Image 1 (cartoon, rainbow, N blue to C red):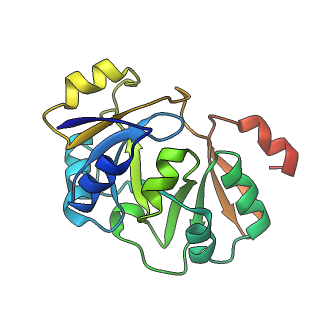
Image 2 (cartoon, rainbow, N blue to C red; image 1 turned 180 degrees about the horizontal axis):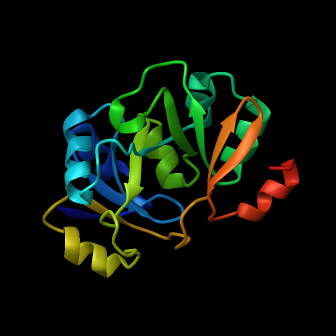
Length: 192
């Protein structure tokens, strides 16, 4: 396991390309991440998190990828939500792996930090909080290193907001709040 500075994403990219699992700042909180199409790495995340395989991960990607795979979504509303840090549940045109999709729907979040933009330029990643399912939050880098130093391939140190993202569903132009969190007040701008 290596410690990685978020200002240099190259070691994280190399670990992910090799099928590894990393912990990285996912804008609002620290999250486990793997490349979207890495079956073995995503299986490891389910085990690390003790999470049901029936509860898919969020996908972090560039806006072009998200807009390209969106099915019957209001693209202007989707772009607004992504640009403002929301995690957005949408139907997709393509079949994504079961660890990132349920009933042809996936939750997407925009790669909105320099670290995430560089990593996602190689490919979309999955993300889920480092918390063990049904347990308390883990936001301290020291606690993360202590708990996971021998269980993941790399830990990226950086800044996080410390509060989970707001998760919304966008279905045929209608926005439904699924979880209140970061930037919830921005929904008033578009009448969500």
